[in-house]
Image (cartoon, rainbow, N blue to C red; front, side, top):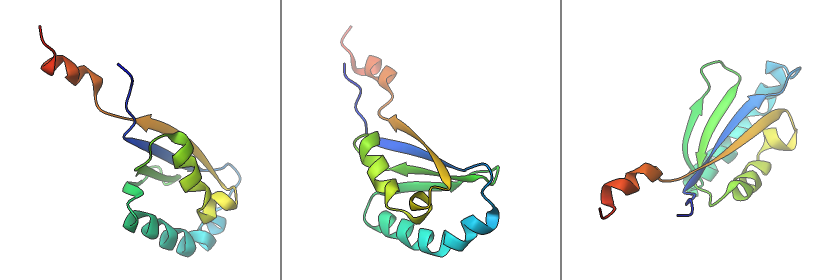
Length: 102
């Protein structure tokens, strides 16, 4: 059975050598644009990383290419001061065993 992608987790981490001041200078614009993505239904959930080095988004995207395109438009991405890790996620496949015919 093919895996269905229902979202993409994006983990953003501040690149080595980037200062807090560099990040904070961009944050007002970054926040406004991220809120707009949320209001447009592209950001489902967002979290601060507990280590203070970035954020985690759950995007409503059909694949990592779409998620990458969404993230490219944000100010922090345009300045290339964050690393991005993309993880496609979908339904928990072992649950199919509950509805499979014996």
